[in-house]
Every structure is written in structure tokens, then in C-alpha cells.
Image 1: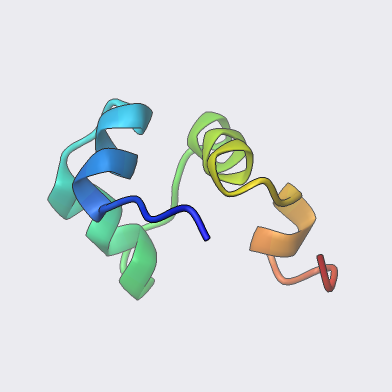
Image 2: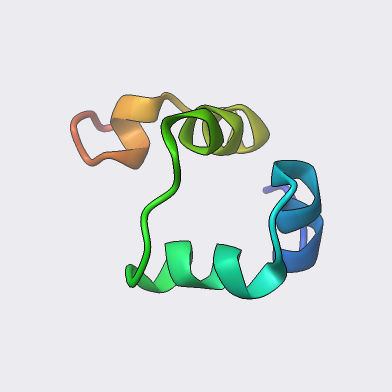
Length: 55
């Protein structure tokens, strides 16, 4: 587990915390660049984040 706050992740992505919250609740989608960064932060594939693989 990463033990990062939403603010920590938003800071790493260079976006505001409310923008990251919108990613989490599905009201907004990250750019391709931020999708890749999120995958790197959580050490998962982009396919996993997109629901196309189990891990």
C-alpha cells in the first residue's frame, strides 16, 4: 500500500487535489500523461487502471 494522500498524488501529478478527486469519483478522466504517472505511483499497469487486466 502506498499510504499517500490525495494531495500527495495530486502534487506528484502537478494538478489540484479537487482535480484528482474527480479522477477517483469518475467525473473526470486523466490525461494520458497523468494516467501513466498514476500507474507508476501505484506500481500497476495502465491496463489495470483501465480495467483491462487483473494486475
